[in-house]
Length: 226
Image (cartoon, rainbow, N blue to C red; front, side, top):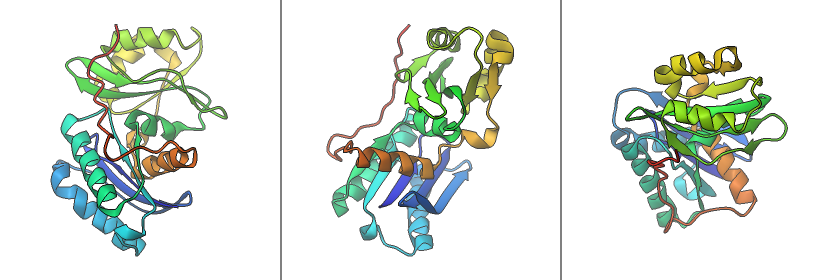
């Protein structure tokens, strides 16, 4: 299955083509430039590198957020247009899950954090290792409230693996609260890669869990539960 994966929910824009689980091409940029001006050229570049046309795709997957409102909207609208024009299957993928999946084989709890501004974080809780699973819904909370919620899912002495650009802003608060229990991923893993979006999208399609380009919408998660 040739699946195009796209994410524009953060300043890092990423487009990738994955074919039957194998990465064919990926274009990822972390630069100050609007996604609206660089997304279509990036898609065109990946298709040319892969020596295929958009018509050769079997499906598309897109990061639906949470993240930048404008970035998420651009990515979702672009992929919906492509899938509508070519009558291809579409899958929306959580950007938080895509980032957490970069640590897929890490044993223990994995917490992706994005800076949601307004003194809040976007976050979720996953279990890594051989039994990958989601342990929480996606949240938008002040960091202390998020760490309170995290405490309900983890033993008081277990290590917790954090990942995501929210660590640049809230890493010190996490360290102060959790001390040596907090393990931070290297910054290079904070990237929501198009390849990961494509792989997670392929898994959804194989399980019959695709979306409709008529109803797929961004996941802004602006209001959390306190």
